[in-house]
Image (cartoon, rainbow, N blue to C red; front, side, top):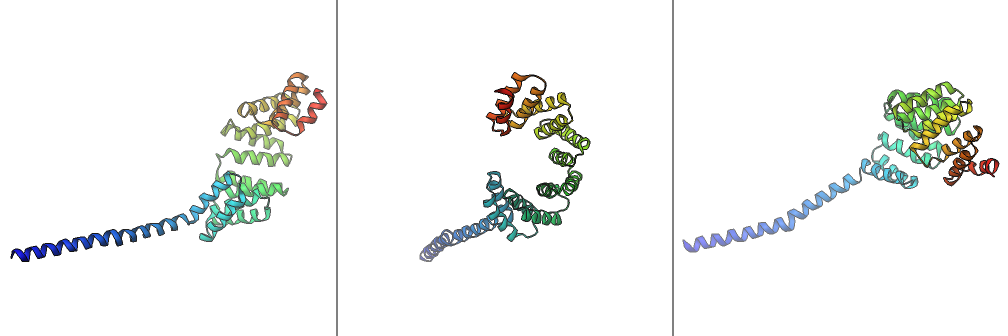
Length: 259
């Protein structure tokens, strides 16, 4: 009986060792393989390619972003975000035809998203289709009425259409939503300047500079107003700053007014 019990004990011990080996040598590698495949599948998903594309677009690398966005669309041909982002990449590359096609596809796939309408407006602006751009901006504003950037863009379009009154209203709206919206301040100031309302233009250019001390165009506009107001020393200081910040017209203005 003792011999039989010892034999059974050795058998169980042997089986336990075999079981341990099967777990350490077989089961765990299989699980690792499973998770490796799962990780690769996830990392190769449309969303993963989109995230990689975002990094390249943010870094000013639209060509590299295109590569990932093409892969995202191959993975998911109904991904509106991928089409919208690829349109943005094409736009940065000045391939406006393909940008337009991608924005239109994004709109078909997700007509309740303001972004492709907003972006398509930029293509139409580049092409001089101001009425088309106005329609897209208006649609975008309906979909996202609290977005200050939409009102800035529509204000620029309205100004191009010589509808300065409505343009000012849109810049007012943008500033009410975001008091630090420098483009709205600058463009509204530019309209006031054209209308001869120099004090209002001065205030807007000054406010834009306060928000962004490196806003070269605003320094240039401020310098021109100061020159018209007879503040020659101040005008030259503003124009010199505009030149230092790289605004090209400042050089000629300095020659005209300050030398």
